[in-house]
Image 1: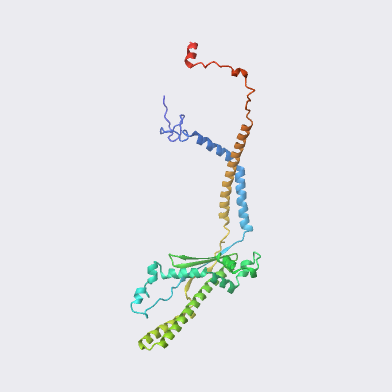
Image 2: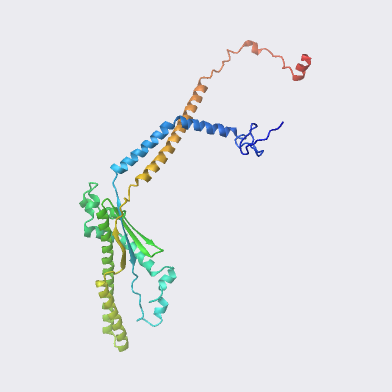
Length: 346
């Protein structure tokens, strides 16, 4: 008499599911045995695994809270201002070809980038350059607080070490969506991180201002020489207009407050620490420790089984040739076949 399983999805007495299919573990009993063996193994060592895991988490959290150096990150946002590319005084159609005044220019059309992006890449290159960083360190005497905590003699520190030490704490990223530059500096002091980032902005502005003034002065000097050497009155008038423009460019660069870039957000330090992340470090340490403890328990169990197997092989007695029973050397009778056994039983 066949009985139907009233609970579909659960195995019946025959080991099959209610829908008639075999139980998933019935065809692979070895998998079930191995899984149960590992579960029992971990359960037997659960106190050790969990104890070591929580101890490691407590240790790393205590270290981060009590002894680790707390770091803070100052942040600032600026918008680079592209330089004036108005070339209307040099040829009538040259302005339209280069995109002066309205477009992004010939270079931006060829490269597929905007003037703002090109200026931002220039500013990032300057901020991360060796000369700019070392001039900043020398001007504001930053080497003293950079190397005092590790006991290094500031007088013997090479410029390359100074550059690497401060540049590792500084970061500049360009936001393609907003077109802004996001600057940050990390230090163990909130106020010092904010102040150093403000010095970065001031040094960048002064460096770009100096370059612009020097470029305008050289252009004006070149135009003056050209005016003195030409006799064409029409050309002289055009050169005088270009000279006036270069002089105006030089004076604006000297007095303009927001020259080269506009500060959207001045340097500010959030309340939360940049490092260490206590909660994140505790969770990561716990996960890694738990995984390593499980691996150690499995390896220990495997080594114990291997050692026991080797001991069993070493204690097995192998019979010698002299200990063989002499009766076994006599010829033996052939074995009785199955049909002969059946006939004798009848």
